[in-house]
View (cartoon, rainbow, N blue to C red):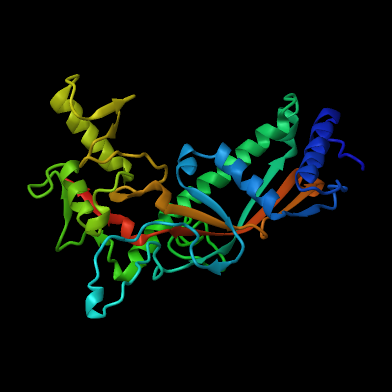
Length: 344
């Protein structure tokens, strides 16, 4: 294999080792990268690929479910209690005891969509990074971080799964997939969803919603009564809302201890008796109450593909990654979503 003259010998050695390591990870024999090499992951390799994305991605990915599934469409795989199991039946009158379904059976299933994560690396960067013996690890960590960030971004702002996406028109990946918030907007006509309007604004700091404690309490009332006192509920809010509440808190209390837990100037607990969890890319003016394990990203474990190619015509290395991927709220009734919140 001949190396382009403008790629140093050290860089070429690092790059060749990167290609060889990729082939080994996919249990394949390395080939000439100038013509490209296709890789198709087995379910076990696909699981490893996504585990590394979670490992190198934002810490929020570790708090939710990233699950490999067999089919592109089907029933959700998460298990959640949908109601009560206790009761009593008057069998003497001929009424049969009727067992209750603890796992919801009427919830909408999942659908996955082909998703591409394609990246390129210029020779000039390879030359600059070739001094690092762990060049490939540094590069792949950056790639996985980017993939993980886009997975989370789509989870919050994804509205549809278009055949051809337009990043210029949808910079928040609104057309890549239906994310968790969009699924809640659509669930039973918005049963677990509230959006502010001009006629019915939701104003934090107004007489009716004096602070975030009040708003969280009101949002909890959107949950079925048997979910309102769950111990695993958390609150996720937009940065604008949390920043506003922090400013108010520090203005009123200074260094005086209160029931609010403060860590590195971030209030982390006790709004409406629920902990606040910071989620990157969550939209401003929005609030979500849910258990974290109610949020899932599914990938089809036989759909993970990769094409790696040396492209001297463009002085770069190209890496094409794809998988069928989708978003799931395991139990929509276990989530309450409000958007359009403004600040007084």
